[in-house]
Image (cartoon, rainbow, N blue to C red; front, side, top):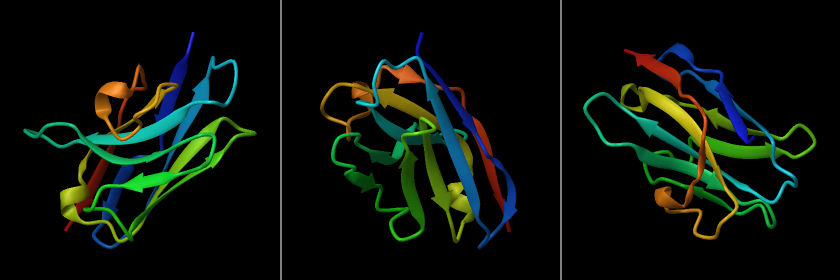
Amino acid sequence: DVQLQASGGGLVQVGGSLRLSCAASGFTSDEYAIGWFRQAPGKEREGVSCMTSRDGMTYYADSVKGRFTISRDNAKDTVYLQMNSLKPEDTAVYSCAATIRPGVRKMETYDYWGQGTQVTVSS
């Protein structure tokens, strides 16, 4: 079975940094894209960033461009989300998801979801 394990969340002050990890298992190859999503209290889940497998294309939400960086270590089947210059509005539960289907920028494309990790940015 495919499993995704997100980790790395925590409490950080404004301007601080965190690195989230998403460890994937159960895939028969590394031909899957990973997306990071977040959901703040009272708000809908939104896409943060994603990365394709074949060509390593990356996408970012406008709200995190220039501050967050997604990267991938295929040898470890792990995708990272480096989050810098964190703001209070980044506070949310962050989840990673995977898909082997095209259309990685659409949330509905993702078939496999991991549990979330809480990120809290305090001012």
